[in-house]
Every structure is written in C-alpha cells, then in structure tokens.
Image (cartoon, rainbow, N blue to C red):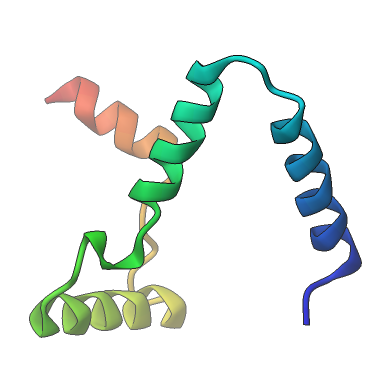
Length: 78
C-alpha cells in the first residue's frame, strides 16, 4: 500500500503536468518515462550474481565502499 504522502505527491505532479503549456517539458517527461522502462537494461545472470556478491560484502562490512567525494578525488588524481 502506498503512503499518504506518496499519493499526495503523485496528485501534485499530475496537476502540475496538466497545467504545463510548454511542449518541451512534456517531451522531457515522455522521454523520462520511456527511459524508465525496467527492460531497457537487462542484466545477465553473471551481472546479477556479481551485484549480489558485492552487495553482500558491503552489507556485511567486509567492503566499506567509497563516498562520492572519495570517487571524485581518486578520479582527479588519475
């Protein structure tokens, strides 16, 4: 069941979209909807296994991961 806030947010967004007169905004929304298709980026069984392994290591504390700041700093150094 959806939360009351989520339902309210959806209604607010629907009303906002209904009031739009700029076709560019509508085109952007349509593009977003098309790109949000879950089948757009199917994963192979190997990729799913790798994600599960890495997630398990992260959740168990075996791998701490990196913050976005860490990643940016490492990219700047390279």
